[in-house]
Image (cartoon, rainbow over the protein chains, first blue to last red):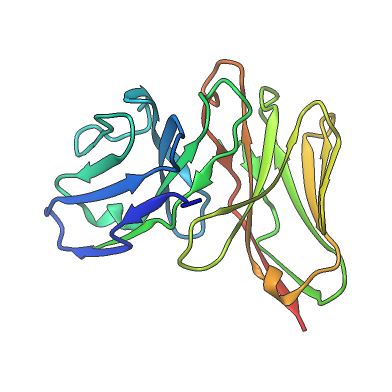
Length: 116
Length: 116
């Protein structure tokens, strides 16, 4: 069974440029998560989708970050414009059911972003 | 506030011996705990989990212990192998409402090195 797929794996951009990350969750998984991981830290949630609905985006910096999961399957996370402090690893995860259960989240390989 | 803490940034053990990784939490609403392993340039890989209704869960060489009164969990790896060398993250989630609902809260990680 295929795991969570993310692309690109690496991205280098100049500050103020836009960037987008794509995620395809495990087939049949209803809940999709975007996490941010800074160097030396654990991942932190940016946004959680249950099917196509964003049910928790409280940690998403909405002035420059946006996300969508239009058909309840794959998802895109966008930053516009990127800042130097956005350099980090962006992880996508998915889980089978809805967040009310004790669900295990499965992570993709991440996209490593470097903003110059 | 750091609700999940891994106070040991690194741990070094000899092959064949036991590795013990520790994790403390402060949020009494957490009721599901997980350990993830992460190799460089990869996403976190799920290892083992435990529900708050249990105090121990085993899976092969991996055992997780939960002490709810102390708000402490640990991961035991016996016997340790060089391939276990990675960063280990503990994570917690809460089914009930509040800011920890529906997401994983991670510790900072512990770098485990197993020497041949």
